[in-house]
Length: 232
Length: 232
DNA sequence: ATTACTAATATACGAGTAC
DNA sequence: TGTACTCGTATATTAGTAA
View 1: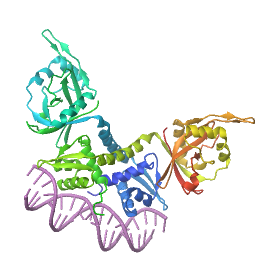
View 2: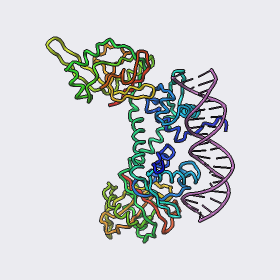
View 3: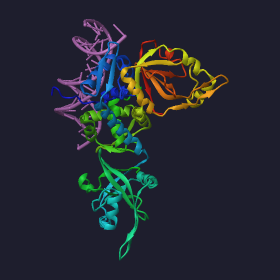
View 4: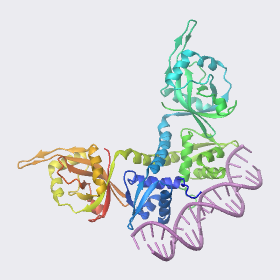
């Protein structure tokens, strides 16, 4: 446990961010504990300790000057910051998305049949990037989410073309990238699918994914899930 | 002090971010303390406490279900998150910039004369958005920064055109948006200025700004400053 | 001025537990 | 199962101080 690198917690990350804001990412920046402390709304001692910990964790390199210190954010530090940045981007970039909430229900088994037809499956592989499990997760939307569904329709979907074989024609469909959130667990690589002509119930949602979501998320009928429909 | 809203520290903000990642920004999300705790790498109790604090601070609204809870990030919470996001954007969007480090020196007084000439001043007002103080802050670059200056030249500058009067011609110049960082204090609205034909010393930097930087930042000869040249 | 130590205090944490 | 208490302990913080 001795030489182990300490992990960077939120407090240290906030300190690292302040250093980055002052230019510590592209070269060393000269600071004092006092100025850092002010930016962190903490005491000089705390600022001093934070810098020591960041150094221990290998996220900054320091050179004491007696008259302040020169601090440079290392590659590891930049990685930590960028990871945080990416999370915030995820938060605010899919801001235009819609969260739909409802309960899992038994589908009528129709989905399974249509989805596995080669005319659709080939397009899924090409346009969604995966071959979906042959079945849909059915979600019955809450009252509040029914109107939210209208906002989903405003988002730009992936279009699946209609096609025909010898016997009949199969209509086009829309797919919206979505993630299924269950109790803090998030399954990201999914799509809401709906026929283009939606005589489909407006309070029903069908979700496809590379895996069987019921099993993957341990879902049973009546369980509540959130489906986050994201902008493409 | 009683009814005062608690401030949101880094730990609470990290919790708020996790809730936002789960969709708490656009509608309530169902979570349990246990799932949140896992995401925060902390205990259930800590997750519970964090949620209580966020609620006290007015950054989330909650509804206990007995079987978990529905949590919605309030407007105040979204503002807190967005503020953080903006800081990270500042960090990584000016990533293409260059930090130059050096010591303040006495200029030769030439800058003052040229800058205040109407032929230049009019362009400054129009293209930089301000009328600079009639004088430049001279910075003698460190060894390491001399090569960094080459990277600055690669950035896209604001061009100030040459002009002439009855007596002589005045050459064109380049201006790079920059901020001057001194001990954690940052003065943002400044520009590095250099003649287009740079027989100018490569280890000297001249900075202009709406105010007299020496006074504004309390600078004296020999003091060390960082000049952050930012992408336009 | 600095940084960073020591020591006293405040706060945070998680095990156990109630509901 | 949940959430959220209490409570003993660990950690963080800051004032004072040394170098």
